[in-house]
Image (cartoon, rainbow, N blue to C red; front, top):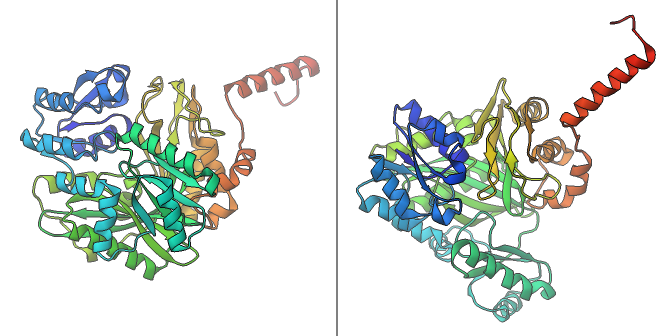
Length: 478
């Protein structure tokens, strides 16, 4: 199997391949020649220079790498080409097994406008909005007609990951925000189209994990909450969601399964919703036609291997379970360790000079690096996923506190570790009282909770100890 990706996602897929005795082929760009996923694979192919367009997004080179390594299948992971319908079609046309949903489905739901129409046809609630927006006068007219007030959200029609999304607080910001959203959309996805939706205050982000085979069997693996975000990108996820009661959980999960069944989905995928905690209503956001970054916490609470399920479905196997067989029995948290300054989210790249990975009961680590590895400036800053599990939410938070606060050490680069620790220790997070605006509302308070520690602190401690002995002489306790 060729893994058409890098870093954390490539390593994650390789673990399941090792379980199943499937040889793996890695691809790498020039700066990634000594990357963790390259060493872990059975073979590796250089596919180009640092820019993604010359390497990880180059479809012809990726296909050639699969042919060169005599790979039977390609797994795209997440990001890069994972939701590219054209690439999926190229793989299939070359007689290679595509581990993911059908290209036609990827194309249909990859366009937010078409996805929204599919959801509406399936009687899935959607956020009030306007599509095919070409100028701000349309937005103003829509707001007048619907008697809506600011804020609103402008979103890129293509892509995801928070790119091309701009919140507009008032009419004065509208023209600049509209221009910014279209510019980001064009730069990130090559498609400047945008849609506009009502902004849900105190919204919470809920997603439902779906797996489906080619024989019409569609099963949900329950939900995850991904509300804690920075710049519209998730950094903490948990399963199950603390926002839902049993009735709402049942409704939202079966709604997601019904939608995926109606669009003919196969493989693993996720239906994302925005939950309005004040009205207890949920609205369709999008379908992710790939393995999600946070799939690991669903695996922790269900005991299933989602990557393994994707492989089985791709080679024509039926799902080995029914909906009534799925019984989550734990709580799990995941934090994303990004190479970023925790105070302002600016990138922090360089060499990891020290890495102490958390261990102990109920801890799972998905790492894309090793001590001495370089974090290059060309790609996503995620380098490790840290997960914890417990009998209940309080238990899972305690384990995460231990893993983040006592057992993790990363030197040479800045990471989000201090911010993540501040969040899970915050009373509002512990009480389950938060929204997608949690970080922006509490940022100053969270930063004030940081405990700055580095190797220089240890040097100063030793210097102080030496000075004390020099001044006071030999002590009885020595």
